[in-house]
Length: 584
Image (tube, rainbow, N blue to C red):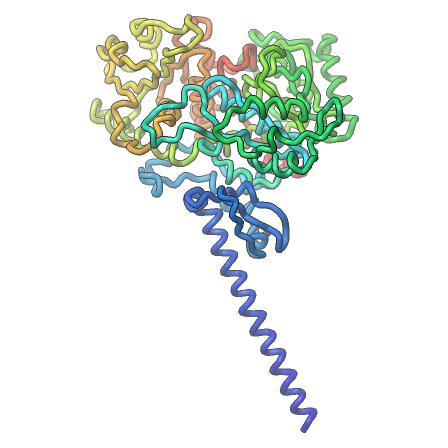
C-alpha cells in the first residue's frame, strides 16, 4: 500500500510539473507574439511611446529595450522574440508600404511608389570585418538636405562594410530645414527621414546607436583616448546629450579620440574594401591598382569616352570593376590593417583638407568582392528610403495629379504626367538658372503639348512659369496643400522629389542633388518593372542645360568627376544579381 501511495504521489507530481511547464510556455509564447507585434510590426507605437529599438542591448535576462526617457522594459521574452526572427525576420517593416495609418491613399494606389524590394537573405549578411565594439562617428554635411543624405548613405555603407557600429549624430537644425509653424519640428535626426529602427533590427550585420548611448558606453567609462598622447578623454563637461546644442566642441573632442582616415577624399581617391581581413587581399588591391596605373588592363580610363553604353559586368573580375570606377582618380585608399585595428573612426567635415563626403556611396566605395558591392547597393535601395509618412503623403499627391491629367485629357486613361525639377533659390551654379522660355524651348521635343506638367521647384514666385502655362497644364505642390495637412513643412522638398520621380518624362537641374535623387529613384523603379532601357540602366530623363549634359541619363556611362553632379546607372543596373551566392 505504501508503495502504491508513493507511486500515485509521484504521478501527481509529474502531472503538476507538466501543467506548470505548459502554462509557463503558453505565457512565454503569448508574450513573444505580443512583443513582436507591439514593438516590431507596430512602428507607430514604437515612435509614439518614445521607444528606440536601436537601443536593444544585452542578452538573456539582462536584455533591455530603452525608450527616449531612459526607462527600460526588460524581459526574457524579448530575447526569444529576437532569436525567433526579431532582427532578421521574414516580415520586413521597410519592405512594404501601408498608408492606412498615414492618411491614405489605399495600398492599391500607393503601391506605385514602391521602388524597393524585400530580399530576405540580405538581412543575414555580415561584413567579414564585423565587430560591434568598433565604431564610426561622423559630422553631417554642411550643405542642403540632399547633400546630407548622400553623405549619410556613404557613412552608413562604410559602417556596414567595415563591420562597425554606426553612431548617429545628435539632432540639430539642418540647412534650409527650418520652415513651418512653431509646432513643426525643426531640429532633426536621421530617424525623422529614414527607417533606422527597422534597419538596425532587420539586419544582423548593422548596429546603430545614438551619440548619447555611445558617449555613455565609451566616453564616460574612460575608454576613449587622445590619439597622440594616449591620455583618457571624457566628453566635454561629461555631457552626453547634445541634441539641439552647438556641436563644435563635440566634433573637436571626437577628432582627438577618433581616427580620420587620411586622404580619404572622394574627389581624389577610391575607398577600397578588401574581401576579408587577410592581408593578402590588401596586397591584391594595391597590385591591381598599380597595374592599371602602369597601363595594364587598358590603363587609366577616360570616363567621358570609355564605357559609354558598354558597362563592365557587375560580377566581372575586381580589376575590371576597379578600372571602371576610377573616374580619372589616380589614388586608392584601402581599409588596411592599421585602420581595421582602430577602435573609432571619425569622419569629419573639414574643407581645408578636403574632408567632405559630398559623393554618392557607389562612386567612392569599391568592394573587392562583387557580391558585397551589390549587397551595399541593394541595401541603400531597399532600406534608405523615406519614412511612410512622407511616401504616403506623396502618394496622395501623385494620385491627385493623375486624376487631374485624366480630366485634362480624357484619352489619358493612365493619368500620365511629365515632371520638372527647377532649382533656383540660392543655387550656387548660376549657369543652370535660365528663364522659363528657355525651359520650354529645351524640353518641348519630349513633352506633349497641352499635357499635365508637375513642376517641383523652390521658386516662390510661380508667375515665373507663366510662359509654360501657355503650353501645358502646369501644377505645383502648392495646389495640393489640402492633401498634406499636418505634414511637416520641412518635408515638402522630399514630397516634390517623390511626385516628380513618377513623371513619364523628367527634366532636371544639372548639378542639383535633389534632381539626382529623383533620377536614382526612377532608375530603381525602371529596373524593378523592367521598363525600356533597364538593361543598360538608361532613363527618359534629361537636363535643361548645359547642352552637352542634356542626354546624360539616356545612355550608360561610368561615374565621373565631380561625383555629385548627377547619378549614374551603376547604382541601379543589375544589382539584384548574385543574391543566392551572397553567403557562399
